[in-house]
Image 1 (cartoon, rainbow, N blue to C red):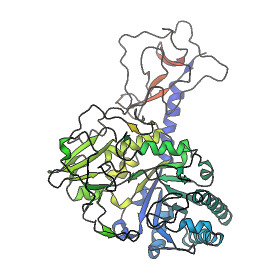
Image 2: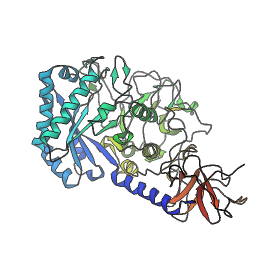
Image 3: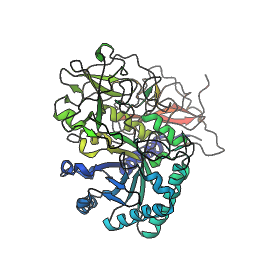
Image 4: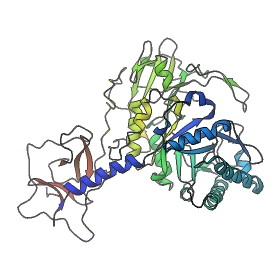
Length: 528
């Protein structure tokens, strides 16, 4: 029996692409203090908007400084088909959550406040941004290393039950913002968070703020991969690995993207060692973009700049004259391990790590390939003419993953010399952006259990010396065309032309892609 792939593979692949584009979650955080800069924005680009942040007090009740415009914003969002949630907590609003969840009375008040707020303001759910259960976030946060995480789970179970009872005819969402590792218990990340996923609709991973002025060295704010032994050993890839390995389904995760960068001041001239993004830095944080200003940390009692550069201001203030070109004296570099750009000003010794369309595409392709639900953005007002959200929304589950992904983020420096400028039309010039051998995003039709793939007599695999192997993600001219990844008849990889690009798929385990006559089939591997 032969297993023809033409219709089955194409149908599966096209179906996956269409479904991914239809179902992708795009969460945007709406900082209430930035409303004036958000008015007039096209929020229909987002499937979910989280209004940030409601801050709880010691009794479990919370206040939201954007209350005056909630009705207006929610009405507008619903008219666009976008869901509206209230986000509770945040960096400065998480200090009392640990104590609130310890006490039955304050815990019930906290829960009732959420249910009432959803009902009174016609919201679609609650987002909880507790930074962090079982771990110190802001220095004045209450932390119970042993009980925070189990208390949080118990609370979420009760909240799920309350929402399902109160809104029996309408599903209300519970979402969370989470850090790059699962919730801590007794000083270490939890090894199992599957129980949380049963009551939470999805979690938004904050895959940014990984390196910054708090470290000894400069380093990427949001690395795709980390470099072993340098900076924080966490990354976009390692975060996805950590959560899924702890039992959180990938389909209930969104990948966090920061529409901003962080600046620090290097000790020396970083352009003298352009392949090394990790260099000694001063502890004094420079002023960031035109919206930055000294801010007072009520916990530590200190005042400092944030050093933040929003994407829109990197562009509007002329630091970047195009998405991939820096204005002098700034020099743009591309880091082959973190898959992120960075800027350096030799005059001021100021360093900026940020995300741009090129780095976001790397992350979105990888997240889609891993089966994530979509993406989360902090924050929506930081974009420039839609340059970044456009890339976030270009979500194709059939896109190839990166060949250095899935390894816990432990990348190795590439041999390619970084360039000061990258052509705008060359979104991903670095090596390592095709699907790994043997990896697949959409399987072709496989033999049924108990059946053996066969090759009909007279249709043995061809040994085509003139065969030219297609390359994943490269242009193709006939949509629906199928081709084996090579002519050996021993590997299971094959290609389908979708949207004018080759997409790499695979035959079932134990079979190989065979070029038999004018057809592409899956069958027994050719004997060498």
